[in-house]
Amino acid sequence: MKQTLQLKLSQQLTLTPQLQQSIRLLQLSTLELNQELETFLMENPLLERDDAESEPPPPPPNGAEREEYAASTAEAPESDTTTSDPADIDWFADAPSGAARREDGEESEYPQLAASTPTLVEHLMGQLALTQLSARDKSLVNTLIAALDEGGYLSQSLAEIAEMLPPELEVGLDELHIALHHLQSFDPTGVGARSPAECLALQLKALPPEIPARRLALSIVQEHLNELAAHDFARLKRLLHCDDESLREAQHLIQSLNPHPGAEYAANETRYIVPDVIVKKVKNAWVANLNPDAMPKLRINRMYAKILQDKQHSAGGLSTQLQEARWLIKNVQQRFETILRVAQAIVERQRHFLDHGEVAMRPLVLREIAETLGLHESTISRVTTQKFMATPRGIFELKYFFGSHVATETGGACSATAIRALLKQLVLAEDEKKPLSDSKISKILGEQGIVVARRTIAKYRESMNIPSVSLRKSL
Image (tube, rainbow, N blue to C red):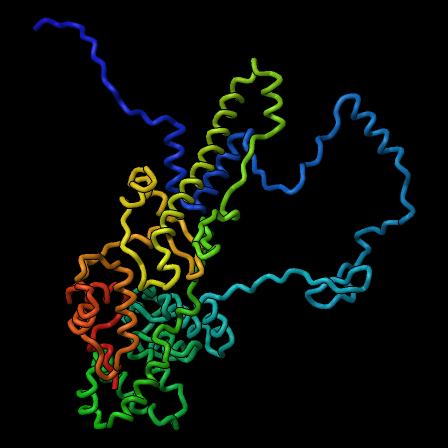
């Protein structure tokens, strides 16, 4: 086969670095954006924040100006005030706890640091240190404390713990049972339990014996906890030989207990959300505005910009960084402008939700917003992910306003969010002795013109963590 050279013209879409950066910034959350900007600020000296209230102090003089500056400093007259040696001053003399006394005699409070909450292990170890147990017994209790999970339960059996201990210690199950008894006497009550039934029983045993429902409740948690969880009240009354009123009191007593005694000591990471958009009603119209606290203020460093202006021929590296800084500032601004456009389009379509709540949520898909704004659907998806809107009804992710829908008898559509809200209203208003089944809820919604299958009601109910009809039934 003879080899030949041919010319072929073709078109290829190439993402420029500026466009790649714009897409990346658009999909970042506000927290991630600020982290990204910190990296840019450290790497590019021409970029700086523009959130300082005052200009930075001028740089120290140099050359001939330094000599003049030093001379003026040396000629400055001495103050008549005598300064004491700091080592001789008692800074906290006669000052109340947590406060400092000013020269005018007024007290100014020092900022108080919030006390950290101890962990469950620290809380239990503090109690163990105050006991009069022997060193060996304390070591065994300490071993059991280390085996607790976050809920305060002993997740391993005593036999498994005994096998893990060195054989030369010769620790028997009897000793571990005694150590467990000591641990279960600690606060919070119920810690060290090996099952929910044992946890609840420990708490009931710690209550005063004169409580009327205590004895019946103890029998339930020790022998019939599964029947109580299944709300099989008829079987419970038959097995325990009690009436409705006695069983109701025992049930309420059990419900007042804490099945997770160690949960209050678990470390909960607080997640703070800074809304990107704030929605307010202005002259009977809902208007979205960018949140100034979420918008980083960036600018070009004036000193380096002046250097580039004076010496353009010898500042190749700085010129590249200047262009990158300008791109970043423009892309950040474009990011927030796009978020605002999308947010306002959402607000205009979900104004009934802002006025009346979830039951008035309108069906909405990404394509509708994309076609309205002339943007690609993937762009709307990026904008609505991890971007938040503050409204009088709460803070919501922009993606919250989109969702599936079901048909209505009139040929329209009803938002899944609105159906969930109606489902919640029906369950809250139902008779606890005769709760509504999924089929009954489907029928009620059908009477309102909303066609929803029973299995769809079951799916929505499970997603909202609403128990089934048998578990919602009470005495």
